Length: 171
Image (cartoon, rainbow, N blue to C red; front, side, top):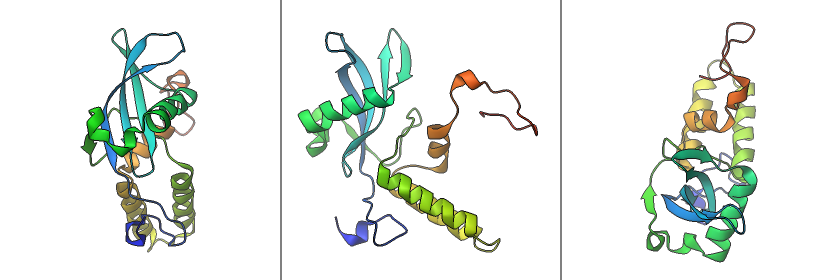
C-alpha cells in the first residue's frame, strides 16, 4: 500500500481506503444445506466481506458473525473473489449500500476508537475538526456515520420504547 493511500489519522497505522464491490453469491449455511442467495459487499483492498444478507423464502436476514466468517473463507480464501471481483459478477460501489449492516476490521475499529478519544478530549472549538476527521475516515472506508449507527444498533428484541430521559433505543 502506498503511504498516500492511508486513511488513518495516525501515519504509523496504515489503513487502506476501501475498494467496495457488491453483488450476489450462492452460499450454503450448512454442509448439506441448499445453496441460498446472499447479497454481499466485499472490500477487495482489505480483503474481507463487509456485509452480507441471506434471502430465504422471501425473507432477508443479516448473516451472523460465524456465518460471515465462513462466507469470508469461501469467497476470499477458497475462490479468491477479491482478485477479480467483476469476473464473479460483483460491481464496484463507492459507498456501502443502504441495505448493508456493516462490519469493521480490527484496524478500522482501532481507528474509530482513536478518533473517539480525540472527540472526548476535544475542546468546544475543535469538535467540528474531529468530526470532519471521523467523516473523512469513514468516507475513506466507504461508510458514513449512519453506517456506524446501523452496525451498533440494538437488536429488535430490546424494542423501540422510550428509556429514562425520553430517549429511544432505536430510531
